[in-house]
Structure formats: structure tokens, C-alpha cells
Length: 156
Image 1 (cartoon, helix red, strand yellow):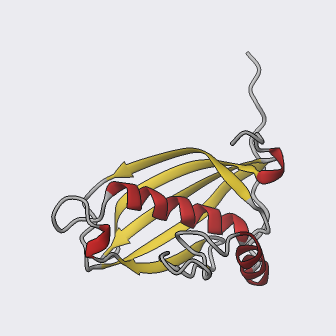
Image 2: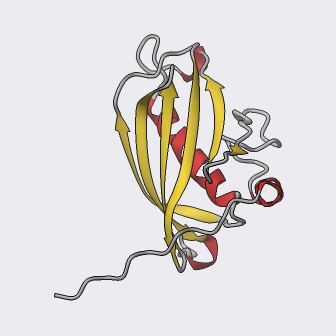
Image 3: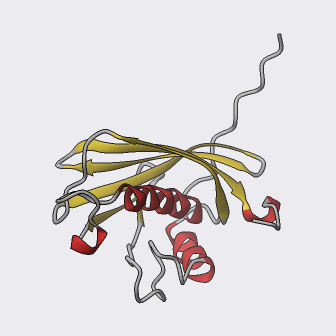
């Protein structure tokens, strides 16, 4: 049985490239778009480890069960973090697959850290991971596969 070659490491993070790509490609984004007045307007910053991170406090309008952030909002946050991690590499891509593990509820009104990094890349496929941390411990973990926008199906 032949084994597939390992995927190469992703391209490096560039803070200037992140800002340029995000503002040009995602100005109306619900998560990070500065032009979306109803959006969250999160500002992801590149980390020293090659990823991106931000801080976020969910308000009552984002509640699911009493006192907890809605699961769909959580998925949106980790998806946005991974997308911004690609922006930091000058890549615009669409989500092909998203797997979210809800380890604990995310409380409304508490600041959390959202972080993402790119694990590997091959051609037009990128594999990423993200976490939401509360008081330093992971409460959500996610992985995602993203495809460069130039390769996306026009019907999507």
C-alpha cells in the first residue's frame, strides 16, 4: 500500500499581508468586517507562533441556552479565526469542512481568547485548527479544511 506524501508546512505569517487581504476581501464579514455595522468586528492579530488571535466577550444577543453563547456563534468564531489565519498568509479561501468540539459552555459576558493556526498546506488545500480559551483552558477546539477561492465551485 502506498502512502501519500506528507503535506508541506504552510507559508509564513505576514502582519501587513493580513491587514491588506482582510480589508480587501472581507470588509463585510460578520466576524471581522469593519464595514459590517451589525457584525462583531473582531480584530485578529498575528501571533509569534505563526497563527492569529483575538479576544471576544459575547453579549446577551448571542445567547443560546441561558448564560451561554449560542453554538452556531461559536462555530462562526472559529471559522472566522481560521479564515483570518489564512489572510495572514495572503490566502483567501472558503471553508470546505469544519469540525467543532464543544468541551464546555462558553459563558456570556466573559472574555475569551480565540486563536487559530495553519497546520499544513498542499496546493489549494489548507488544514487549520482553532481554539477558544477561557481563563487559559480550552473550552472549544476546532479543525477545518479550506480551499483557495480560485478553486471553489462557482455554484457555492
